[in-house]
Image (cartoon, rainbow, N blue to C red; front, side, top):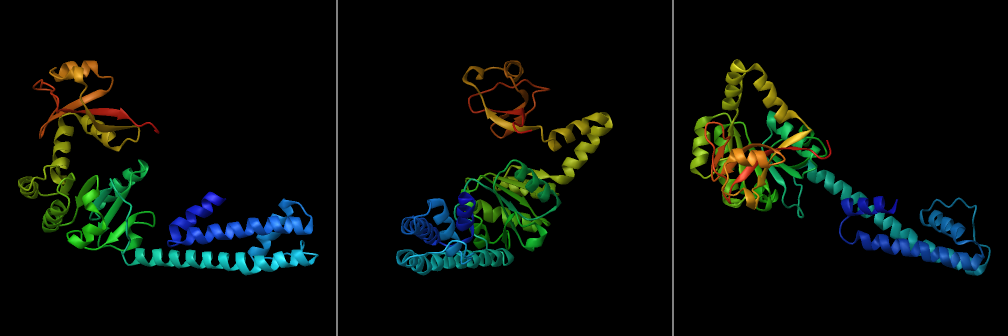
Length: 319
């Protein structure tokens, strides 16, 4: 009960509320101890009296019968009751302020770090957010949309995703990833440029339907660009040759049982061919990332070097 109460205080009440709560608890327990001694009753019964008195419920089944007990009761009334009243007032004000900030898109994330910042709300964005929720990873959505469009559990920064002030509120400079999913090519370019200026060291992934935009972003140093039209076109073309190939790709992307991950190369694998590493690894090795190139190792057998990363298929632990 107390951990839940403490969690509510930290979430909804401003600074200083924990001190008020601590003082109220001390007053209740100290009052119960004094009442127990003064009235010659068990501490459990005295604590029951202290809680009902401090909460102003006052059932009247336990009452003081002597002068000392009445003095204790008066001290309880002038300490614990005002403290609890102030605490609940602070929590109510904090909850209202939080709700207003959410409605106005003024949410702040002062302690957020190593999170994912999503710029824009498109159809694919909802899938990404759902996947992040499943993995319990923190994310911030930056979009000029209403709160009702994303749900109460999503942290929304309402505003222009290309505005530097909005991006600073989302703390893109300390993010782990930045994902850009906007409606028009111009918006994508503006947001990408702004994000790159504020967070030069943070990886940026861009979803666009234009190959021209992908090339333009590559010139800006943003190489992790996904063109939706090209993905769909290639998937359809591959499905003509191998109808089950498209189903395999869908299972790889849509399954909750495994994931594609990038892992480092073991020291003993450096200098070996990718085909050899596949035989040595306990995981399914899909390919190797060497510099800016991602190689599958079908038509060629690249050598794995110290800076390479392996693309592997991993089971999800909590699947």
